[in-house]
Length: 63
Image (cartoon, rainbow, N blue to C red; front, side):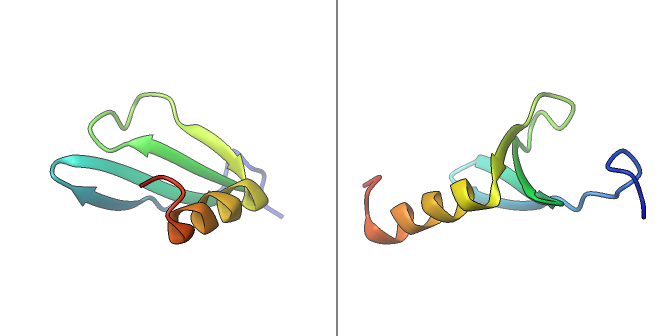
């Protein structure tokens, strides 16, 4: 088994009007970062937190 440090994380970018974010799955975590600052910090969410966020988007909770 590879350690978490050895694991390769694949970032996926999505943009709207130049406001871009990148999202990656890393084991049980979901990482989110600013695509313009790839060397900057990333936010870490559990898979269940990420699923709740996605549900909120679909429900229009953030409109």
